[in-house]
Length: 251
Length: 306
Image (tube, rainbow over all chains, first blue to last red; front, side):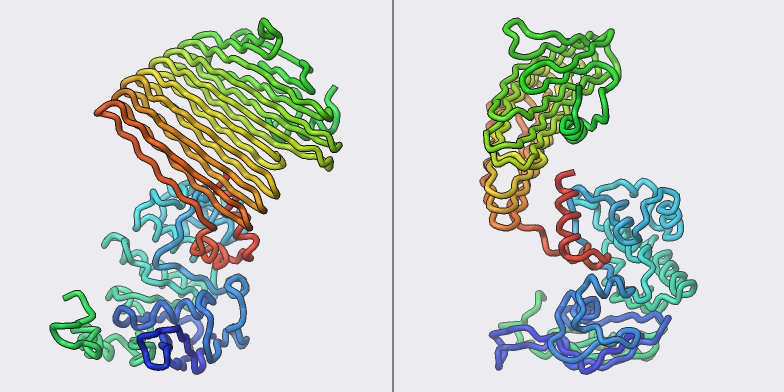
């Protein structure tokens, strides 16, 4: 359903020799239809960059992205959205004068009150009182993430990408959130990619992928991933660590 | 009585399809076109015949007054002085607005000076829209002034909007707040082409426990220019906030000057101001929901000025 071929995302970096840095460093991977993927890995490893490449938010430097048999790496965000890809942002945009209802209508084209309420019921995590809330700076981090997730699901995507959906979400909502994504997948065959560090998502996934330094270093079940995850959790700066003087981390 | 242009102007500035229910006063090209009073709301021409006096009886509930002005006569500059006296404990909505249709190269303009005396514990909602249209090249000027006096416990909510087509605007809002009164002003101004708009706001928090919130939303398209001044002057224990946001599109320019004066140790005054282009994360979000870039821009501006 989604195939990444020799995919690169490169940025200018004057500290590096050659003046460039590969954030995504030649990824080859095929995602199967209707499966649940959890992408994890250390901070700065390239997880969000990869997710944004798929949605078209980051431009592909080299390589290709094939979605449902079509090369999409030159398509705009809008075209990819209309082709059935949806993206849930780690830090959702905040607006002035745009409500949750407006976002649902934009995502679905539905204005009918009953149908909008049916969507809210289906998604479940947003109370009715959210409907006419402005998606502005007054919302808490958890509230806006619930709205972000609900809007993504409401669009009925074929491929849904969630970037750290649990940030700011209370402990009691994470379980239902995981179940919701699994239900959407079971009922609508939504291929689901979740970028997360949260064990609940890793446990729910059919495939756990670990990204480090812009490359996929593991894909398989959670059990097999555990030794590597424990290793990576020790220190993500070990390659650049220069002892006491310039640790490059905040220890 | 109302021709097609009049009807379009009325619909745009006052959401009126035909003559409104309740009290109204419609002024066309500097003259009274139509008036209706109700049991609780009286409208009369003032002594020097330069405008109207609207009196709302104390205790009036859930009534409205429409006082639109329409201009379609070339070369006319219409100045009107209107006074609103809102009785104690009354609750009323006042819808004003000025629509200009300019079909020639002669300039047309309107200056509405509106004074509100809001009685004790009365609540008034004031909605004012300004709009200009027409294929003529004549310069369209709208210079509205509002002066608000709030008695003890009075609430005033003012929505002031300049929608489109106004070449030059010099907007002035002044308010004097009594004890425990509340003033909410939301001003939205959209300019395009070579239009200019200046908004000057002076709010005096005079009474103990008074509160004021001024929200300004500006959008500058084309080469247009807007200037926003807002001063909150706190003379008692009170709370005041100014929020002014400006979105620049194309080559528009903006100056924003919120100013806070505390003349009392228990005054609490805050402001936030921003000027910039549409935030890219907002555009990206709406495009990821299937809108094109242009649709996303329009939707964001529409919400911002809503």
